[in-house]
Image (cartoon, rainbow, N blue to C red):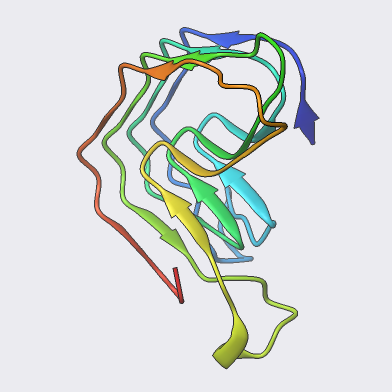
Length: 128
């Protein structure tokens, strides 16, 4: 679900894994420790869980849409991040957008502040 509200002072310690039998699992296109996809501001948030997902995977947010005044700042990731690509595409042509903080940043040409991030988690994936 796309969030357009502000997110601040959030922490995630749970693992989001790619196993349909697990309690918390994701094969979604947008996967993040705090949000899958966001239009709003994200600040002072951390992820320490292992995150596994589809095409857009990030420790904090899978895809961040940067419009108007929706800054993103002072977030950290300590969890392992893995993206396997879109499951509906054959393995050779799968592509992932993976990042310790954000998997993909999408914007409309306006420069928005992005600052104060730390990633110490391992990042890996399929064709990223």
